[in-house]
Image (cartoon, rainbow, N blue to C red):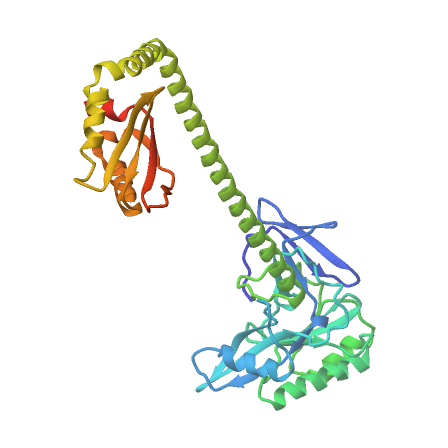
Amino acid sequence: MPFQRPSSSVLSFPGEDASESWVCGADGAWKRVENAVDGVMGAGVAVFDSAPFWSLNHEEAPDAAVALRWEGFGLTSENGARLWTHWPVAQKGRQVLVGTLAFSAEPASQGWINLRAERFEPSACMLPLPDNSLVVWKELGRFVVAFTRGSMLLHVCLLASRRLDADAAFELRDLFAALQTHGFLDELAAVHVWTRCETDFVPQLACLFEAAAVIKEPRPDPRPPAEPSGLLPAQVAAMRLQKQRKRRQMSLMAAAAMVYLCFFAAWWLRLQWRESRLNQADREVVVAQPEIDLVREAQAHWLEMEGAINPDMYPVELFHQIVSLLPNEGIRLKEFQMEDGKLIVSGEATTVSHALGFKDRLAACEPLQHYTWNFPVPSIREDNRAEFRAVGTFEGGTAHEGQ
């Protein structure tokens, strides 16, 4: 399968007995290091199930068919997780052979997951597998076998055997026969052994796979695959979703804080503006205070003199206005008096209605509007005549404003 230099320069890979860390240098060469984190996470074959199948779609491997296949085995992708991947292996007429891997429904252990990894890839896709070959290597104490058809990975799984001996060779033959029975493989060009084995293992392979060359060699160094698988374990998807929610909450809180900050800043600026206006008004008042005092003094003198110089305030004029309010009959005026800014009018009416009518006319008289009138309820005599008394208190200003 093709390889390229990834955007991440760090990867981890399940070695024979422990996880391996690799770092890509500036020259593109990969070197093994200790305890590298993040980057590309190579998921071992132990956490996957492989299930190649023939699809009726001759153009490309249908996502829906692959999803339906794994959902039938009990897998469900939730919270953005992606539990399976697939790729086209070969084409025959209108059919396409699809290779597919999925995380086991009940993996033996979840300790292999690096939650901080940027990307997850099957370990079998991180090795340069030879064309039309059976390849055996070791991952974390277990032996792994992979089958390729052409240059594409077809099937990969763990061996039940814990030792690479004659029995393991027969297990490999049975696996190969099962793939042939389903029409997934024809013949093998070679059998590659990338790990230590018993002395009888290679000779037994040569006998069982007569048409294939048996090659024992070191395992190649891992590389990130050129095409990302898009795999995302459920635990990592849930963690990333939780982080996204926290970031969203923090963003909302920050936005709310910004809104409050802008509101209080605008409120504070308005207060400062109003205080500035008030201070300006106070300064203007202080500057104009001498003129204001002169106006107030002149107003006070006018009020003192208004009774003498305002014709509307002359006793004769006031008396004339009051007399003009009397009807032709029914009311007799008995008293007209001015003292201490008060105008006192009393009289006698033939009926209470006449007295109250005079009260209404007195309150509505335009020239007398600068007086506030107190008109108690008239007293009724034995002959039904009503005595009334009205007291007008001079409020000032109205007569002056009318001039």
